[in-house]
Image (cartoon, rainbow, N blue to C red; front, top):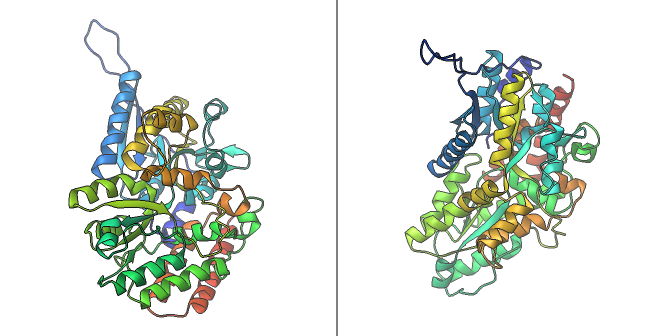
Length: 449
C-alpha cells in the first residue's frame, strides 16, 4: 500500500463534513396499465481487488445477494490499491457521488473517523459480530464505537521453496523463524552452490510495524494512539533499528532483492514464483496464489511463521487489512442496504469461502469451525500456520496497533528511509531523520483539529 502524498492528505481534509449523496435508480413504468415499479436500491461498493480471482468472487457474492434481495442491486467497482480508492473517494464526496460502501485499510481508520464522513455501525449490526476475533473488532473500535466492519485481515508469513532447499542438500531443514536463522540458512545455501538472491519481500513499513509489535514495542505514543491522540513516533527505537540493520546486512551480502517498487507485494510474489529465490516474506493473503503458482511451475512450497529478531518475546501481530465503511450522509435506505450487504459479505460461509480463495483470515470462529468441518486448517497445513500465528497474539498496547490520522504519510517517510539504507546510508542517521520528519507531519495534522 503506497503512502498518501501530502497533496492527497490536503485534499482529504478539504472535504471534512461534506455531504455524500448517492441516488438510487428511479422508478420505471412497465406499461400504461401498471403502476410505476421502483428500481432496486443501487449500492456501489468500492474495493481494492483488481485481480481476476478475487474480483470475480466479489461479483459472484454481489449477484447472490441480489437474488436473495431483489430490491437491492450491488455494483462492485475495483480500484488498484487503497490510496487510489482514497483519492477517488475524496473527489466523489465533493461532487455528491460517493459510494454507499467503501473498503478502507486499517491505516486509514483514524483519518476516516476524523473526516466525519462515515457513520459507525448500528448497534444491531454490531450485535451480529459476537463470534468475530476480539482483537480485530478492537482495532476498528474508536471512542467506544465500531466504525469499519472487518472484511480482510492478513499477517506476514514466510514462503519457502523446499525444492531449492532439497537441491542444495538442506531437505528437512527447520524453517527459519528468526531473522538470524534466516541469514544462516542463506549462507548455507550459498556454500552449497546456490547463486543469486536468497530472500525477497517488498520495501514496506507494514513489516516493521509487525516486528515492533512482536518485540512488544509501541509504534507511536499515547499508548499507540489508543488512550490519547498521537504526538510522536518511535521510529528511532531498537525495535525498528534492529530489523533494518539486519536487512542492510542481507543486502550487502547479496541475499536480499526486491522489485524496486514500494509495497510491491504482488511483484515480489511473482519473483518468487519464477522458482529461483528460496524465501519470500509477504502477506498470508497470497497463500492461495503462491501454492497454485508453485504447483504450475513444478516446485513445492512450505509456509512458516514470520521470522522475528532472535530473543523476541513474539507478542503477536497487528491487524493488517481493511474494513467496510458506510458514508454518513447517504440516504437511510441506501445505508441500510449497504449494511445488509456488508453483513452478508462477512457471513460465516462467505468468510470461509474468502479464506479458501485468498488466504485471508477467517475472522469469525464459526468460519473457522466450518473450515475444519470441510477438512481445512489441519495441523501443518499452509493456511493453518497463518491462522494459528494470528490467533496466538497476546493483547497489549503494542499488538493493538497504532491509530493516528497521518499514518499513510508516516509510512511513506519510513519507506524513503528504508530505501536510503538499502542504498548504503547509515541506519541510525536514516531513522533519526525519518522520526523528525514523521513527528512534524503528525504535529501538522493535529494542528488542524
